[in-house]
Amino acid sequence: MQGGSTKYTDCPKAFPSHKRNMSWRERLAYLALTAKLTWRSRGNDEEKLGFAKYPSQDQGFESHPMKNGKSCHSTNEAEMSEDYLKASLDNGWSQLQDDIFVEEAEVGGDPRDKITEWQAGWNVTNAIQGMFIVSFPYTVLQGGYWAVIAMVLVAYICCHTGNILVDCLYDLDPMGHKVRVRSSYVDIATAVWGARYGARIVHCAQLIELLMTCILYVLLCGDLIQGSFPDTPFSLTSWILVCTTPLLACAFLTSLRRVSTLSMWCTVAHMLINAIILIYCFTKAGQWRWKDVQIRIDIWTFPISLGIIVFSYTSQIFLPSLEGKLRDRSKFRCMMTWTHLAAAVFKALFSYVGFLTWGWDTLEVVTNNLPSTSLKLIVNLILVCKALLSYPLPYYASVELLETAFFKGKPATCFPPCLDETRRLKWWGLSLRMCLVLFTCAMAIIVPHFALLMGLIGSFTGTMLSFVWPCYFHLRLRWYVMARTTRVLNIFIIVLGLACGGIGIYYSAHALTRAFQGLPPSS
Image (cartoon, rainbow, N blue to C red; front, side):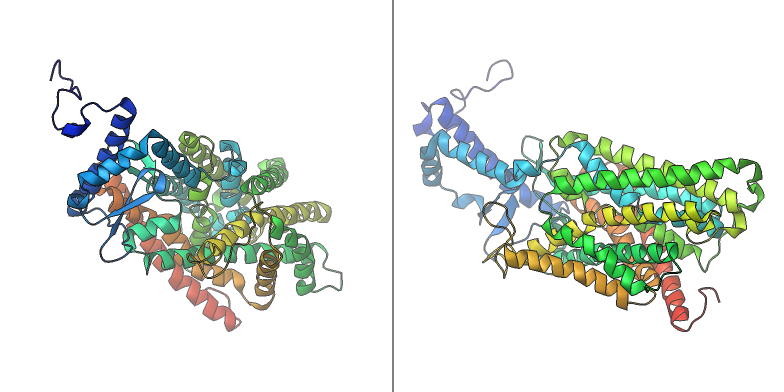
């Protein structure tokens, strides 16, 4: 030991006695194996400190995450004899390079699927600047200034929970570097709750949320077109079938980059709608009804509106996949900040100005307040285009969930992959995807009071996926390495999410029961 640094040749414990004269490549390979053994022994200490256990493959082996998501299995460190180390060193530098190449390929995926931070931002904006924007002025009618505050507060909370959810995808290696050891929301739940229950609960919640979103988009398209052409003989069912026809093309989507392009045009349509309505509202600025904005809450309807606000900010389902396919993952937090900031400003401004224009006469869909029939027709048709362009993102995410769970090939899943070696869809895979589109169409037709049903189920899945579970998983996986303020914030969000979810479930169930009786939501 000289000058505070350790030389390999001077430290008898650095290398075995018969390896003192190893080449630098052999030394590097030996150090890599030593780091892996250190990580395994560290896993036992982390469990004592309260860290979540990693899922066991069987009773004798425990899986510990290694670099970039690979796992090694061992019973204990003592079984790693010097003969094993010698055999590993004999593989040499080339084997170590092969391992790193395989690991990077597993995490990075196909380079053709990589997206920029702008493309990821279009997808997040598509998710959080949804069709519900036209109903937001009505939430101000029900909640006054509290509704505007909720739009900003929920944006901040969802941005925070999105960032910590992605943080749960990573662990620290022995050198203190962040390493991505998980790839999805389900993997995080598996690490905390286990594969038997946790993975299935989160998987089902995500699938319900995504499919309900797809169904709602189809239903809204039919409603908007029927409202735009009320004198035609076509029924709502006919218009839903017409709107479903172009959506069958979504079955051919196999790349997130194409979905990102559609999300970009969806954002353009969204900004166009905002611009038209805001310009009209500002032309009526002299007649704004300032005194109509109240500091009060309609307890029978505002919880449902609050559930819609939370539901409109739900993007956590897409974030692990988006972050994993980013070319530069260091820009993920910046992308999240700007997209949620823009969403909060747009929603708060649009809602407040829209309510000031029509006051107590504000309708559930603000476009119906437009006096000009031609202007209402233009806005409704743009909304239909926006709904059709919004559909591919949740549809693509639900397809990925189903393929991951059932179509990866044996022995991992029951059914073979839907894509061949050239990433082309097999005929039966294409048929199943089209059946999923038709399923969303059928549900939009046959389920009555779907909006209230969405509020009921969304009060659970939305608050759990966006509020409760990300914070809970983050606390379990990072309790001893996070700041105290972060702990307090996470616990506050969990309590708030449970309260909002419970209230939303109660009042949504009450409104749904009264709707089946032909009564309004309020008692």
